[in-house]
Image 1 (cartoon, rainbow, N blue to C red):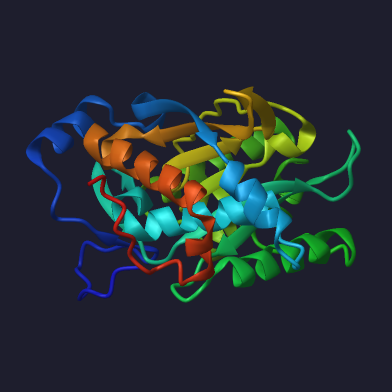
Image 2: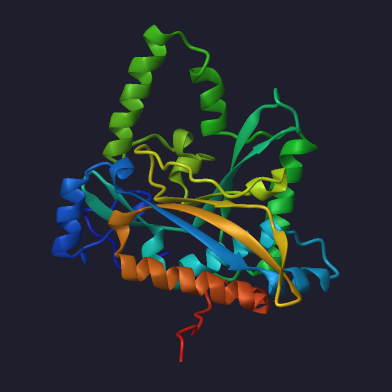
Length: 285
């Protein structure tokens, strides 16, 4: 995302951040692994305006499409969310990508495939909806399971322990130092900006999911089922979000303001028709 001049400390996939505060650096030293810095956030949002907005749409935009666009817009407005910590240094992704795992078919034995969704600066809800549909249709109708990490997992996962464990150990070492081969980064959700999971499509409430020490992804968001409630004789719709994020990339104040922005967007979904990179003035008056 950043257009600034690159530094010798930059990685091939990210820019080195030299604005880290002393307190933040000490926190990284105290919690050198991402799994040690997990911050769990549970939010219940009123999505009545989202329901009304989609009911009045002629297109086939889904709730998942809308929520993915909203998350992308928040991350463009709040760029620290697109950072990660590797080898005790803070970096910002060169681009913004969301990711999710999908099944080729709805059955217990169906194969799972990792899907990467690039979010460009001029994308809007219509463009992102189209991207997601094309990705899903490519997997389910054409049998296109992607390349890179998806193919590597198929091969590596079938190797015996004697071979697989040292190979995975080598990959983890290369990952920690930013030298993992491109074919293992391509289509790898752990190298995206944010993982999202629509568990609401399975009639499930939001859950907490751990982040991994492998890769460069600092957060994971699960979206629960939308449920109707009656409040003061008025029907309202609510949705739970379960958010796990690496607390080392920003402070609590920054995270809270980001949650407020999500709330603003869900109350004003028409802003998603504009470019995701467009800044929103959502501060409470």
